[in-house]
Structure formats: C-alpha cells, structure tokens
Image (cartoon, rainbow, N blue to C red; front, side):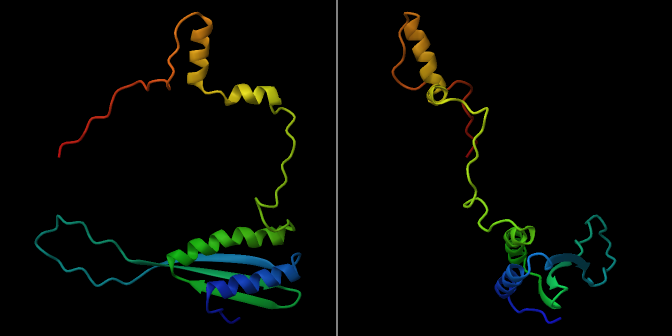
Length: 161
C-alpha cells in the first residue's frame, strides 16, 4: 500500500476509482493526535506559572480501497490546510459512492412547493415594512414620510481613545 505524494494526486486517482467502481470502492479516514515528548520541566522557586501546553501532532490518513480489484490508494498529511480541503472534497467523492449525480447544487432541479405563495402574494411580500407603514398612514389620512423609516434604539457609545 504505497502512499500517494500529494493530496491532488489522491483526489484525482480516488475520483477515477470511484467512477469506475462506485458500488464496491470505499473511502476511509483516520485522524490521530499524538502528544510529542516535551523537555523535562525544571523545578524553580516560582511555581505560580502554569506549565506550558503539551505539544501535539495530528495526522489525517485517507484510504480509498476497492476489494474487487484490490486497488488501495493512501495519502497521509499533517498540514491543517490540507486537512480542511480534503474533508471538503470528501463530500464530492461521496456523491459518486452514493450513486448521486456529480455537481451538487448546480445539478439540482427546483421542485414545486405546494404551500408556496401565489404570484400575487409575492408582490405583497416584496414590499418593505417601512413602505407598508407609510401606505397605511396615507390611507388613514395622515402624512407619510417620503424617505426610509428612521432606525430606532440607542446609539453605540464610542470607546475612549
């Protein structure tokens, strides 16, 4: 089981394997955190300071395996940026494993909602609250302000410089 050198290479090869065998190929992840050995603490007269934090090292290992063909693709990383990027990419690769079409949001089709408001209701919903209040005041015979409604509430205090 050789490790692939880069995350991009693992993503590309895994996508090809999942495209070829979406029913049998699987992706597994393993994240481990190991505490590193720290230098021994020296006893000092001043014990009021808390001890320094123990250094840790996290490792993410990703494995794509197909038991039918025996193909195993592995990648290991300790970089935090790679971990975040690879976890996000697992969603795209998981769509192929689940038999869903690729693309996610772009390929989604809008479904009709039976309880959605009618076209005439959408026009009423588009009117702002300030415009409704001024329209109600105009109907009642009062004068309505032409500008937007003034914001209420307290003003923020400025900090000392």
